[in-house]
Every structure is written in C-alpha cells, then in structure tokens.
Image (cartoon, rainbow, N blue to C red; front, side, top):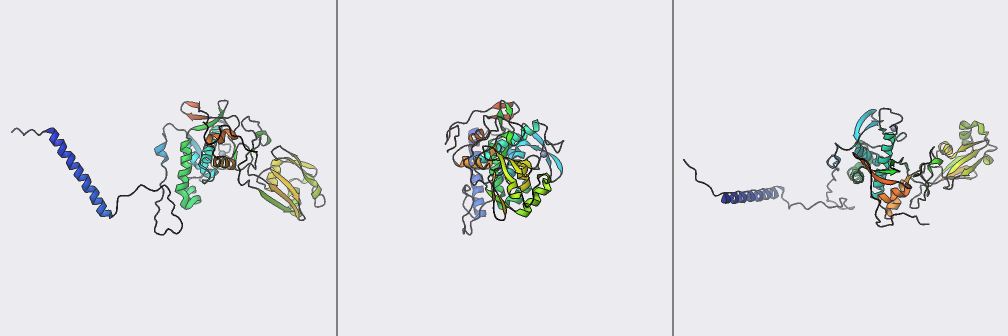
Length: 376
Ligand SMILES: [Zn+2]
C-alpha cells in the first residue's frame, strides 16, 4: 500500500511548534517547582556588607586553568615538592600560580600581580636553562623558598586564605593567565629576574649583593613603596658582645670596647651598608644582616643607654623588582609592563613558547608616560 506523501514544509512547521511548546512547558515546570523567578546574572560584588542578614553570597567558583591553557603546547617542568618529598610534573603556568600565591600578597594591585607573574616565570625559566634546582638534581625547581621560589599548593592556599581562598586564587590565576608565556629578555636572552619584598626607597646594583654585574639589574629609585617596612632591632650591650664574640672572636670585641668598636665603614649610594667594622675585623653588610637578623642591609646604627639599635629600611636583598614598589607604581597608574621595564633596566618583554623567544611590542602609553620617571 502506498503511503500518502506528507508536505515537508508543513511537517517542519509542526515539529518547530511542538518544540517551542515543549520548551515553554519545561520552563513553566521549572518555575513552579523552584517557586521563584528566573535568576538574574550574579552580581560582580559578591561580598555582602556588614549586618546584611539573610543575604546569601554565592561562593565564587575556581577558575578552570585547564580550560584556558592549551596544555599540549605549554611547558611541563619537574617540581620537587619539599614538603611532600616527591617530584611531580607540573605545567609551567600552573606552577607560576602557586609561586605568585606564595611570593606576593593576593590583595596587591592586579598589575603588580601580573608583573610578579612575569618576573617569576622568567626567573623560573632562567633557572631551568641554567641547570635547574641546585639542591635537587632531578628537579627543574623546588618549592623551598630558601633554594628556589616559594610555592603554595591548592591545599596550602586553602589553609592560608580560608574563606578568601576562591577569590584570591581566581585573582592570582587571572594575573598569570593574562601574562601567560610572557618573559623578560635582555639582548635576546632570558633575564635573571631577581625580586624582593621592599627596597627601602632604592634598589641595588646586582654586583653589590651577588657576584655578577648584570646590565638589567641596576639600582633605581623606588619612590612609591608604602610602607618602607622600617624596623628597629635592638640589643643590650651584653647580648651584643656575646653575639659578636661567638661568631667573630677575632674581632676582640668585649664589654669595654664595644661602643667604640662598631661602626659602618662603607656604604653604597643607595644607603645599603657595604662593610661594618667590628673591632679588629670588618664584615660585609650581608654578614651583618645575617648576624643581627636584620630585614635588609639598608641600616644605620644608634647607641642608647642600654645598648645598640639598628634602624632598617626595606625587606630583602634589594635587587631587581621591588614588590612593594610595583604595588605602588600600579596604584599610581602604571601597568605591569611599565613596572617591569622600570625595575629591569633595558630589558624587553618577549613571549616564550613553541616558536622560541619572540619579542613583544613595547608598552603603549596608558595612564602614565611609557618611560616611568619617579618624582623627586
Ligand atoms: Zn631548588
């Protein structure tokens, strides 16, 4: 028996009408079941103000790094986790998220976080290219801040940040993603992108702290640091003498001669102590920093009735990027590229990937001039 032929246009129309009806029915059922209006898009400010009882703030979801990066093309590095005592393969960018989380406060300006991401990525790759982690021969890097860079695992971030974990993680991950693959180069080669917490107002020439004079690690003014991490460290006369005699007995320092026996012998233009005289011997500013447990070598000394006071400024070795200064520059309108090119003299931004190192365009003038000139 021959079937009656249907009109195809009529058939499509009927199907479409049925589909619309089904969708409407589904939406109606959903509204009745949940007994509420269709949801509005989530607010951009998830934090409820104090006393807003009854306001339920949806927990921010974690940025899915795996959805962003093309994992087949990014670099995998071998990371030695010193807390768990194991070697793990990790994507470079995922590692950088953990480093920035541990090395810079997540509340710092977003452009400062981006600058830190590029500095940390460059520092990591420079290390990989130059033999990897010094204390773990099988690893490219380790998670011990005393050897390589500090690193926070997801577990550690949750522990440290508590209820702010998701928001902080997203902020740091975003800074890393927006600069993915970007590195600093000088003369076409990766920079040894050293950084520190706070310079105390001026960064230092690399050869005054480390062995090599690198052209991109020159001392520059760092005017927007706030606060300068000033600290006073005091010792009573007896404790001071005991400390010096134990470490440097050849100094001949005793309770009688100590007040005339300690003096800053030489200081760099930045104000960092180059050498300190201790009786019959002289030690470097770095040795003095270690001996007296000071935050930096930028210090002066003052005698009081009870003993000595070291007035220190800054925190860290003072070479390369000042994290606090980067935050200050960002607050004054500089973007991460201006920050980096200011603290790494003569360096350029480049992208690092499958095609090797490719130069990136210089920053375009934004809120500030391209060439950052500090005031005063
Ligand atoms: Zn290491």
